[in-house]
Image (cartoon, rainbow, N blue to C red; front, side, top):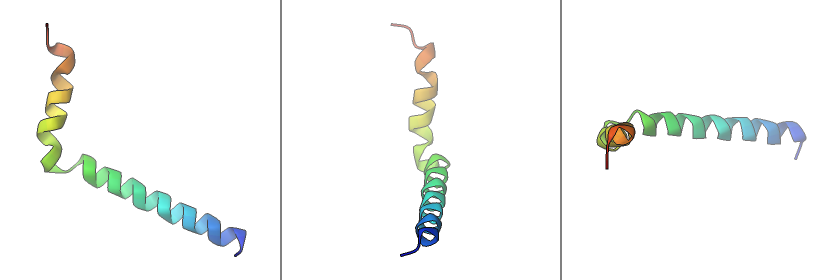
Length: 45
């Protein structure tokens, strides 16, 4: 296997992981969890 093929595979894999993270972060299913996490600094014990 040539080093350039490994570089291409690493780049493609990194891009797929990046797209997966973006899709997960923008998913409406996670809105409630993210809203709760955003309000944590404002809660007082």
